Length: 501
Image (cartoon, rainbow, N blue to C red; front, top):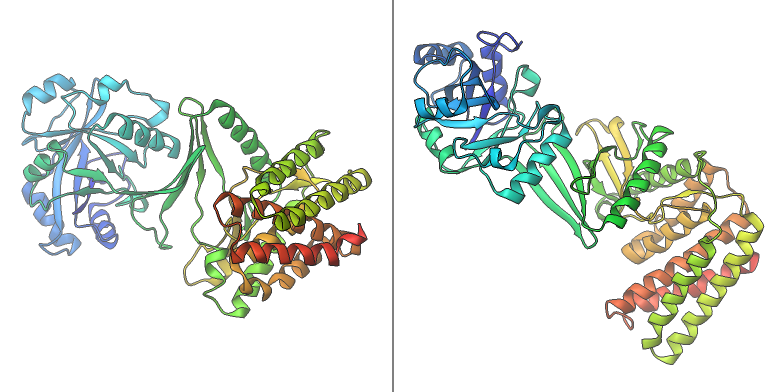
């Protein structure tokens, strides 16, 4: 069952502005099966609870129980199963001794930056730790989550609601049905309880990426979501921190927009080498386009192009790295090494593409090296999220972009060519319906309508095809239909565009 384990009312908790009736009704609306009212140093009587059920108009199926939150030498502890009010501050050991059958929950132990010792979290006098709470910041709840996974103590979540808006926000999942506070105490003490969250792995190589979804849905049908990026390698973590600074700057300069967004960096945790950022509710563009009408798809693609043009128009303090071209040539040489396992005909074709790209990039950077901007570096339909803040309100439609790990200071055509190449690779014939819409919308938004820019896009499309081809070889698909399509696309780009550079 889903229960709210931590809530306060204005009747007996001076810090609360939520009436008992409003609390009960809101938690019912959230779809929970019951709650525990945990006033500060006060235990509701059975008669008061029966009257509250009548006043709130809830049936017998909805469970209302009484616990209490008390002040102790380790902070606030919620008590489930004591038969009397605990009127004043008490030591944890005395509390345990006086109420041996009760379940004791350490409430919001991480709030205000507090870092409990591991021995405290594992203290046998404590039956559970509230790791998720509205009285924690997101970073503090993430710390609780990390320590819970590492040390495997018994954990729950609790809204600690003092206002109707937070009522039922972070319930706890109780493994087996209970009918009263004593049964609930038994479930907590035996560890038959879990915080109500979802943890969804998104990636896992040098960076472990996990999406965490907390609690129940809000009025807009959405839940609180975050992305946690964990890194073991210190050098990689430091690089990610540098990227976070740039992303934060870009966000402040134009992407806190209701329509065009970059997820907010919530926290950088040096001690655990974790970066926490907000997660976006929505679907990736690559998943949406095969499912929607042509009209809707064109709208989404235009929004993606406008987002990119806005990124490229932002004035930044970035500068061209003199070693950038050398790094680029090193990557291209890596592709050349990888294709050596292919038949001679393939090697000859790809080697020609690589030599062409090297030559044209060198010419281009020497000629227009002052026209550089920050590029996403991995701009493709699987990194573009289309969402809607309110389910039934199309005016809340937005586009957000994730994964800035490959952020690069280069020519704007880099991202455009990369997108078109990946678009074709990921969605095949579907991309042909939209690629002109993308390019047209980008040009209109950016004002870069000239033959030189289009030629640059062709160059970087060819450059991206080399990356895709090298990847296909790596995964054993070097002679697949996908590879033949990459070669054909590359030949078209070389023939159509590169003579203009």
